[in-house]
Each structure stands twice: as structure tokens, then as C-alpha cells.
Image (cartoon, rainbow, N blue to C red; front, side, top):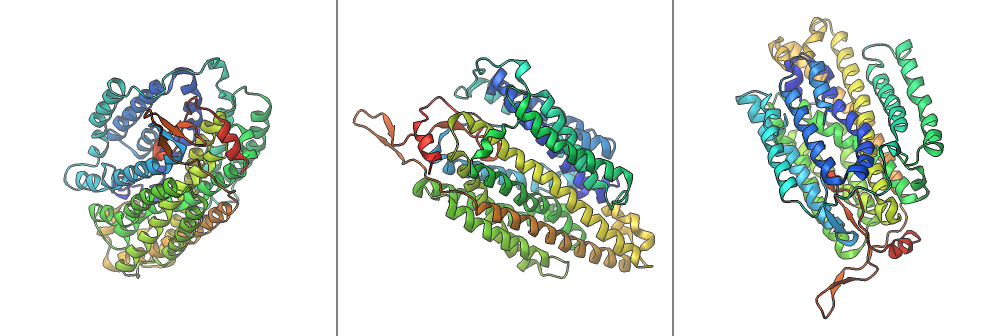
Length: 499
């Protein structure tokens, strides 16, 4: 990401590459969930891949930074059927798959992406998505037949909550722009920032009232918030993703600007964070499946993640790489535990008819938390770096050098040392804010109610599968969550929701 941003002299605003992608994901995630009720899951999955392919093509051909961010805003999902007791095991594999692809894949600052950027061109990080997406669509269309593809009866286009989506979009975009511009582009006291905060904040109660009174199928059904586990999981996801997105975006930049590593090496160094997420996701999935326990893993993982994130404050440029990698490993191990148990806890308490809505809400809270936290983190980084560079007469003339890694390398050694120190200090201060977010998330997880999962399946004398307290079969979505439920009996869910 820092390498691509540098190509457009926009290193200081690189967070917008990720933010633009998260923004459209946040806004349209509930929309796609509702539209899939109308046209079927399989059809919408293929449509989402086509949109992703188009976005990848536009990104690969981008001629300026605005074009790049807009193209990144065009894009994603995937589904699978699993009983609730074994969901942890399967989602563990899916989390591991996502985490490994996130580092090994073609995106810039990943291993394959680093090779493309170094030896070919960064544009191939996105061109390569085209044949991969074509193969994926062929597999889905011709081979994937078990995916639920029946439109929901009684749902028409008139039932899609366009008004709610519009209000939500304006609110999120307004808050995002205010947090991104405040103190960086314009002062916090400027009319632009105040107006954006007023619009974004003012639309929140309007959105809530609208969702309660107007739509037949609200984009965010507020009725599901009567479950304490849903509230706890949603708030937890919102705050802990400050750590996930902050480290994923800024760790490669930290190692390139502070440690002077190449984009390929910085991608390899990110493995120390992502591989532990993969490992612990699989482990906790197995533990949940075998023991039926959820809360202990959630709380233990949350505390490990909090400690690791707090230790990242030590990353100021003078800290040795060995201890840094150890800290990232600790943080990743904790995050893998939280990912798994948080989603399962929320889903286990609700009725069958609300499973899709709860899953959409947890996914949505991840994206929203990522957007808000990335905006604040970018503001901290830019403010600290600029102020420190301008405070030194030697480096002040080079304040614009932070727009490109190439410009930094061309600066005199003394200036590079000042900029290196400035970015190290900025990263450390950013992690203070990130640690506070993660702490709020862990506190929210303490409100999680007791979770009792059904016992494992057993075969009867005829070889058919029976499951005591049979739970519903639901779908797993992107990064191991579930999107739609099947038509199994719901009596056990009602019992579980009372425990």
C-alpha cells in the first residue's frame, strides 16, 4: 500500500486506499443481504464477483490517486452450510484461509504483491484478480449446487430499504470525511468539519427512528438488540478492528519508512501477525466444537490481544525487530481467538429468523469500526509526522517528501533520520489510541451472556444423523460468518436463547 500510494505522491493519505474499500463494503453489505432474499444467494454471489472484477480492472488502470480510491470502492462474499456446534471448526479454517491469502496473495505489501511491485509493476496486483475471479465464477456456476438459491417468498424490490441505506450512507461518509480532514486538511474548528460532524451525528437518531417506523424489512433490524450477546459482539467487533486494520495497513509502512525494508520484506514481516491469527482461529474452532465453551476463549483471547496491542506502543523505531515480531505474534494469537468466539456467541442466542440479520450486523460493525479507526489513525500519523518535520529547521523544507517513499530516499541522510524518528513516534502514538479502542472492545465482551451449544451429531442404527438439541444449519459468509439459515427446527434455539 505505501508503494502504490507513493506512485501517486499520496503516501500521507494512503489509508484512503483501504478506507474507500471498507466504505462501500459497509454501506452495501446490508443491501446485498436483502437483495439476496429477492434474487437468491448464488445469483448475488456471482454479481458480487463481477463487481469485484470490474473494480480490480479499474484499479489496475488507475491514472491518479482519486481514480485509484474510487476503483477500490467498487467491490465481495462466500457461503457454506454448517451446523452450529461445528461452526467454530469450519470458520476456523475459513479465517485461516483469509489470513493466509491476505499475506501470500497479490495485494500490494503481500508476498506475491511485493514480487509484482518489485519486479514487474504494482498494477499486476490487480490484473491477476481477473483470471482468478473468472475461475471462481465458473466453479460457483457449474459445480456449487448446495448453496441456497431460492428467492425468499413474498419479498419484492419495494421491500428493499433504500431509504435506510441512503441515510446510513450519508451519515457514515460525513463522519468519515470529518475525521479524515480534521486537524490534517483543515482545522477541527473549521466550518467544513463542524458541518460534517453535525450531519453525520444528526442522521444517527433519524436513521434509528426511520428503521423503527418505516421499512417493512429494515436494513438493520433493531429488534435483534434485545439480545445481550448481539450487543456485546457488535460493540466488541467495532472496537477491536481498530487493531486489525491499523496493524494491517501501517505495519508494512512502519517497516518501510522506519526500518528501511523493501515492500517484499515488509510483507514477510507481516506474517508474524497474520500466521498466528490463522493458527489460533483453527485451534479455538476445534476447542469450541469439542467443548461447547465460547466465553472463556473470547475473554482469554481478548486479553491476549489487548496486551499485545498495548505492547505495540513500544514500536517507535528504536525497538529491536525480534521483540517486535514476538509482540505481533502475541497480538495475532489473541485476535484469532476473538474472531471465532465472538461470532458464534452472537449467533447462538438468537432465533432462526434473525440469524442472517445478526451475521450481517456483526460483519457491518467490523467494517464500520475499521473505517472510523483508520480515519483517526491516519489523522494521528499525519499530524505527528508533519508537526515533527516542521519543528526542525533542517527537515522543514522536506515536509512534502512524506508523499513518496522515493522522495524520502532522495533526501539527505540527516533529514531521513528526522523523518524516520517522526514516523516512529507517530506510529507509537497511533497505537495508544488503538489500544484504547481494543480495551473498550474487551470490556464490551465481558457483557457476553452464557452460551450453551448443542451436543455433537450421532448416527442411529439406520445410519442417519441425529443431533441432540439440533441447532439450525446456516451459511458461512466472508471471513467465516453466516448469512442465511436453512429450514431446520427452531425449538432448540429458543431454549438456547434463554440460557
